[in-house]
Amino acid sequence: MSDERQAPTPPERRILRRAEVERKTGFKRAHIYGLMKAGKFPKCLRLGLRAVGWDSLEVDEWIAQRLKERT
Image 1 (tube, rainbow, N blue to C red):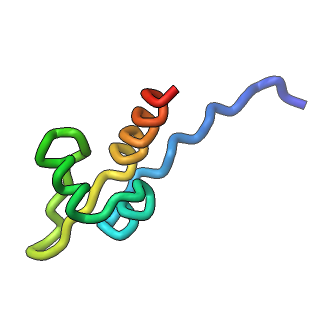
Image 2 (tube, rainbow, N blue to C red):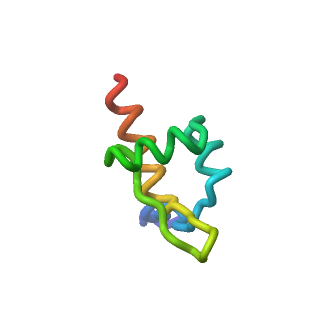
């Protein structure tokens, strides 16, 4: 038996598309973009001419911060 403890694995970092961001936050497109414009939500990343995504860690941190503010 080993007394060594393994460090927790960091969360997976990936790009979330809009539909997944909507599912995670419960917000619709217009509200997400309104929050972004006001500087209250992570900025999206341009993936192509008609495609954007969000950094999953930034979105998860944003959600965690909202939950922390609630308590």
